[in-house]
Length: 410
Ligand SMILES: [Zn+2]
Image (cartoon, rainbow, N blue to C red; front, top):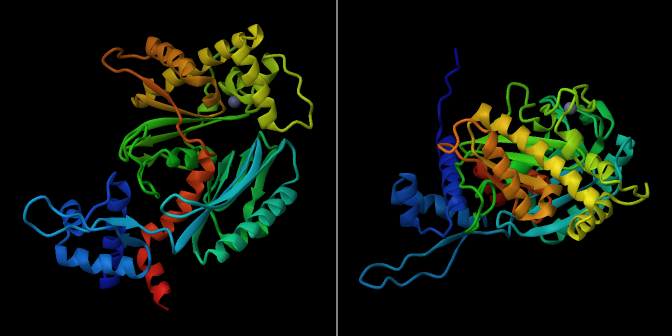
């Protein structure tokens, strides 16, 4: 039986503050106190009190009052205020590592990324170099007089709740106790699979002010495909990432699209990753990159060949698109979610290719045309998992605003 917990005044206030902040974040236009009362169902008196707390801690700020066309009182729009707080997103990926510090307005306070080959690198060395980068960032944050409210780390593998990286095959890392790294002990970041973090970055108003245009609405369902050496995936239903029983859900890269296909690192035959991941594309296109080249330089070369219409590159991409479409059709048939966002390196190859994949998916799903799949390229021009990780860090403020308001008044 669940234990009963009495809700005290602070818990209630904290909850209401969090609801208020989420309402502000998810709105495409700044809301007034009266509009917030209407949207949340809280009384105007309660809203005024809560807004006063948020103003005093520099979490929201007032805009210029608008003058109503007829009689009535001018209304003052409330904006998020980035002055006081920020969060750090960290990522170690198959194409490099780095961090970003963001505030709730979505402004970047500091960022650094190192692009270099990451296979079979020493984890102690990588974590220590990442920590050096982050320490520089923390100096910049301190100079802006911002409080770091939280952090999160995105990794390209399976992460358990007790801070173990079970497996990140494309890094060659297995069964790593993440708490052994000073960076993890010191910042205590939330740690999750990079595709889950990247998917969160697509949800408007998740932890940063919603922009006018977005591929999805805050409560929509979609499949996110994260593509680099590996192919990761995440399933978002009604605005929530579906993590599964162990946090391992969404491994779309290991859907087998050919029982007689090449053996994948996971041991299966014909995994999607073996056709549409970075390494597969580079090998099949006949590129023979200098081992010292950074992953982004190699991808630039592949993109150049694609744009020039190089026959082998076009053939490789055609095969990869076919494999992607097959994997996506399987996923859509199982989940009945018809929106797909392609993130990562596939974003380089343009909307035409996305349309072709979409057509191929629609030719394979059950229920067409009653159900129609839509395939979009991510419109995120930054590293989505890094952005998502920073937003997971910001959620600590948004889920528990009273803690930070009380700290601000200490
Ligand atoms: Zn596999």
